[in-house]
Image (cartoon, rainbow, N blue to C red):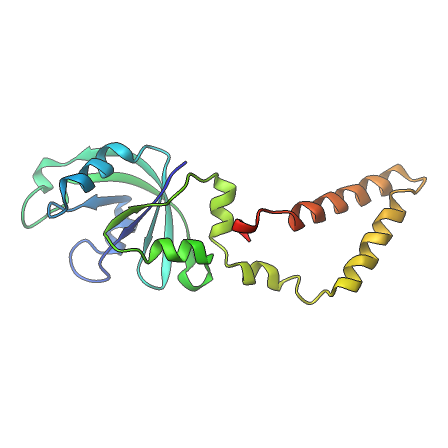
Length: 183
């Protein structure tokens, strides 16, 4: 899946609230032909879009491109459109730095530098410090002690206890070995 971002006006014509309420985004006539090519042909149904207002960033699942001829006027300037299913919003200050850099790039429309799975995107929608803060109160000695207890529990005669201990260890290992680019 590909991720795109779009900058919109906070006030006036074609503001974010219009897009959220009417479930579409548009690309204006003033944009260069290359931008229209990306908007109409590079972006695909099922790609994702981030649109922000400076405080919040909204994530949407993009639909098909469509053209509304009666809206392609100097005054209306909204003939080139894509449907959007808005999925969630996050506070701009709480996103991963890699995503923040992407959102701050110049230009009305941009594409993220690599394809993402939905899981990777979800990880980018959270600042690493926010995700780590929940566990930062646990020191290394306590973690080592907990791992030792789980290892001991895996030797238990109770199969249910062994299973729970194994699951806990695997979950901890998966969390500790996430790719550094996503933490």
